[in-house]
Amino acid sequence: MNVAAALKTKRLRTTKRQFSYEAPDEPLNDALRKLEISFFNAVVDVAVASLRERTEMMSDVASIFSVLITFPNLPENELEKQARDLANTLTSGEHSDFDAEQLIAEMLSFPTWPKQKMTAFELLVFLQEKNLREIYPNLWVALRVAVTIPVTVASAERSFSKLKLIKNYLRSTMSQERLNGLALISINQEVSRQLSFDQTIDAFAARKSRRVDF
Image 1: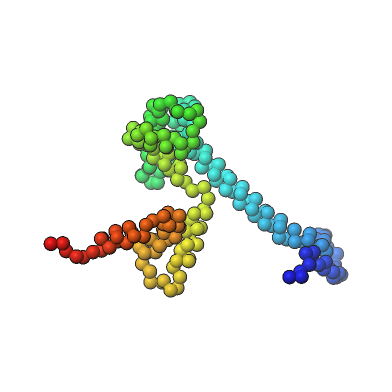
Image 2 (image 1 turned 135 degrees about the vertical axis):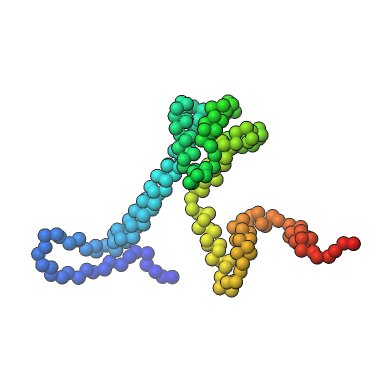
């Protein structure tokens, strides 16, 4: 495109200033330096602040749910404290996802782990494979909550982006049920592409068929 890679140097105009106790900032004559200060540094500052905030949030979440994978090595009093803190975090009003005292009892009676260190997902799979869900129901629920917490907001942002593409001004009268269905298909494209259209059509036709068999 015949565009020079270097930034042009702009000549600064000098104006007379009255005496002031606070000296003004030195004008930037270098265009590259000005770009670095006014744009690059600002973007980096925002990125660093955002990463720091998200790191602190994830650290708080990890500290709350850490009892689910560290309880075999915790003293009993510390285990009880962290389990109650977790139950209080997952309590809304009078409703709670699990009972704290029962969770403590399940952790204290849990058998030896197959490995010395396990993640929350590996422990959840272990309970599933050994059919221990009914024996440790509160631990099962707590682990399911832990492994389904979204790490980022990318999934939510992706959902809103899909909704903007699906429900435009030509589809303003679309019902909520149809919108949910189209959004679900669009978001999970990998799964929807593996579906058999013939089987889907046959199932839909069989459900909507009004023919009476005599």
